[in-house]
Length: 310
Image (cartoon, rainbow, N blue to C red; front, top):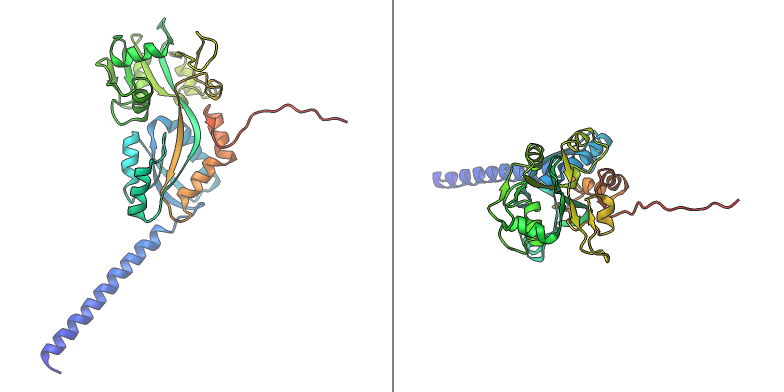
């Protein structure tokens, strides 16, 4: 055999071995990606910061039920959650909208399957003011004037851009108009609350689960410094009615600043993300939403009176 043939054969063997190593590495990576199950493993999820208190409670209960399951939640703006969904490291996000057709088609083209999404609860955007503030009643037209800058009252948001609260208010109240210069951004919902506790010349907008739990000690202390604003009921037949944000006022369509809560899971196999979203949709998860003063969207827990005859 010539030296040239030996050299070519040697290159072929080396190429084959390298290919086997690469394929083996890919297979190992694929196996590693499939190791989590609904009861065990570790995943990172991205959650709209507005829903942090209730999702923390959901994770706490789920992990206590399945000690080998670890859900690492990253709380951020809605836009950042959707950015994370495009990365390989995030298979589940919890936000206040599902996927539109363009987004579904995009994921189907890139992943070869469509992510699943579902409505799981309803939340409300609460208006909060300092306890010393005398005015805590708002019509929709007045909210429009405040947010557009026609009324020069400071309005504090959990961020000026890319948050679900900002998007909701811009779509529902301003109908696409720009915010006025009196609308200021804070770092987070918790920061909004801290600002309002120290200022009587401003109003803040936060998710109800940050301030609506009357049994939470931290929130009870907060309600000594702030109060919830009343908003005009636009669907009530009787005019001039105003409602505070609560599970009841949202359920009966009395409080107008209500919004949905969705999960979007990007799993083509039954993994920990699917297990957690099933939990959120079933009785225990839905009861946690209710105990956190949100409105369960999947299960109806209305009390019914009954008579038992002898």
